[in-house]
Structures are given as structure tokens and as C-alpha cells.
Length: 468
Ligand SMILES: *Cc1c(COP(=O)(O)O)cnc(C)c1O
Image (cartoon, rainbow, N blue to C red; front, side, top):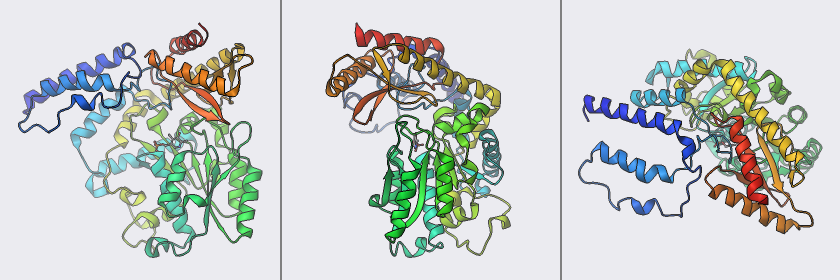
């Protein structure tokens, strides 16, 4: 492809991108497809000869786009927001054009130094003190594994990386509602899933600290070695808020690593009125939140912060670092801050997003999402054909439709069927969670362009499909 063609096609693509975003509400949010429908339209073998960009782009529009779930639709209320924005998309084009590897300072000094700055900005935005240092990770799952490996190394005097686990009586604690990435992390880190202790939750689906304290005491008495607590600040199912300050106190008393998983909720900390979420956070050991969820930055960009930078680097650096302190270094080599060696230039899109919206612009959007969630919650509460099934501290409303005299099984089937019919309509997309055996609909409000009218439309449609 020569430069002239690149320009021409590039402009066409940008036209398409703008049109897509303008007309996104015309697409069914979730495609009506059976497994294999897309696969069958793709050739068995790769082309021998090069094809024209026109042909490739046509197939993108005709084969791929109809098979996409439209995460950027303002009527996307499923799972969690994976929101993006125009500044983020534009930055990604530049990142791809530069095509740089950003594993160490020397491989792209500006990428490292922008990441240094952006992590300071994010730290300031969410209200962490300068004791904390951060880096961009692929996702919250990676950050949680990163925290567990660091905790394991620190607890073993940085020997396990060399010897492998010699004995294993480590124990990790988290609520029954914690994200599955913790189950994965204990498996990968060699701690073992049998050593992940799931602590019961209260009626708000938050971890019960007294039960945590008892579990730790019991383990110590049995000769086990409590290692880490993972705290959910906004669990995936219901956005439950584990009582961080109390948990941190238990962690400190027993000398455990306290990791705070705020994948979604962390973004809410940019609002002064939501800082109550962070009470106790200053005494935790690590904290992760995903700008690629709720901060208008396309996947991937996960912000991972720790207080003990040296423990982190001792865990991940493959050159012996024990005798070196991080302060000796004049630069950050981010390959030593996590699992992958190769790193994309992800700070660039965060820079574009934060500068383009400004902190105020970002705050306004998050504040709107919280207001819309409260509005939706009030509709559910005011209508006796529906019930609320969990508190709404953030942007997710857990609810179901009810019918007098119906059994649990009947209500579960009724709500599951309602969800399928709603999603089949293409007008919106929402997903569910099972809470104490109850099939629960989740209405998540966090897309970049979501407005009151979309949430009103969703509520109207839910009522119609349920009761007409
Ligand atoms: C989404 C989510 C995760 C996983 O995040 P990834 O970035 O996809 O790895 C972990 N924890 C919570 C609470 C989440 O909501």
C-alpha cells in the first residue's frame, strides 16, 4: 500500500467510524446469531494473493459488523461498561502508527515518561497519596495476579521465584462475591484454589469482617499461613462494597497483603462525593481500577498501584535486584513491573482522554451515570410489579419482575425469559447474576453517550415485555 492509498482509505475509514458512532443506535445491541454463523462466511484458507483493501473493508462491514455486540451503544446495559471515546480511538490510531514496544525506558523514552506522568495524574484523580506508584497493566486480572505473586514473594523472603514453592500453607481470603480472576490467580500462583477461603457476605453482598477475622485466626491456629486478602470495591455481580477500613485493620494486624479490586468502581473515586468508598485505602498494599471499563478509554488500560515498589520489582525483575534499590534507577523499566515483556503504548490514549475531557468533563459523565442509576432504582422501587435485589451504591441496578404467588423457580424462569426477549429485541442488552438462587437482572449504566432517554426507554421496554 502506498502513501496515497493509505491516505485515501484512511479517510474512508474515519468517515465510516464517525458514521458508525453517529448511527450506533440503529444496530441491534446484541446480534441475533447462532454459533458458527460468522465462521461459515469466512474462507477455509488464507488468500494466496493479496486482496484489495476495498474487498477487505466490504467484508468487514458485511460479515464482521453484523456479528458484533455493540458495546459502545448507549443501550448497552450488560456486564459492565467497556466504554471508549473519540479521543481514545484517535490516540489508538497514533499508537498503532508508531508501533513501538515500550518494555523499557530505552525502547521508547517518551512512552515510559508519559506513563510515569499519567500514573501520577490518575493517582491524584482517585485521591491516592504520593506513597503509591503505578503502572498500566493489561487488565484487573493481571493486576490481581501481580499482587498475589508480589505478596507471595515478599512473604517468602523473595525465595519462591528461585526455589518454587517448597511448602505451601499460604491462604488467601476474599468474599464469596469476589471476581473469578482471584480463583484464577491463586491457581496460577501455585497457592491452589483449595487455599482460597471464601468469606460469607451480608445482606448487601459485602464481606463480613468478623467472619474474615475468625477464618484467619482458625487458619493460624491450624498452622496455615495467611498471605493476602482481596477486597472488592464494587464487586462485578452487584457492585457490593466490602468494608475496606475494617478489612485493612484485620490485614495490618495479621501482616497480610491487602489488595483492593476496584476494577469498575475505582473511576467513581474521581468524584469528591464518592471518596467515602476509599476510607482505609491508604493502608492497603495494592489497588487496581480499569479506565478501560468506566473511564472512556478503550481496552486495554488497567491502572495498578502499589505502595511497596521494591517488592514489586524484586518479584518481576529477572535480573537479580535484591541488592539494588529502585531509587538507584533514574528511570522506570516497566517490563519489571508485571508479567509481560512487550508492552503497548497505552498511556497515550489516557493522555488524550484526560486532556480532552478534563477532570471536570470526566466527573460530569460519571456523576450523570450515578444519577441515572438512582433514577432507575427509584422506578423499580415505585412499581410493585418489580423488586430491587441489592443496594445501588454505583451504576448497577439489580432487580427482577415479580408476580404474586409465584414460586422461586417460576420467577426465575419468568425473569430469564424476560431477559431473552429484551435482548432479542435488539433495543437493549442486559445480563444477569444469580443471587442466593434468585435470577437477577442487572441494569448497568455506564456507556459514554448514555443519556436519560436511553434509560427511560429501557425501563419502558422492560415493563412492556414483562407485563403486556
Ligand atoms: C471486570 C472485573 C475484573 C476483571 O477485569 P479485567 O480487566 O477484564 O481483567 C476484575 N474484578 C472486577 C471487580 C471486575 O469488575
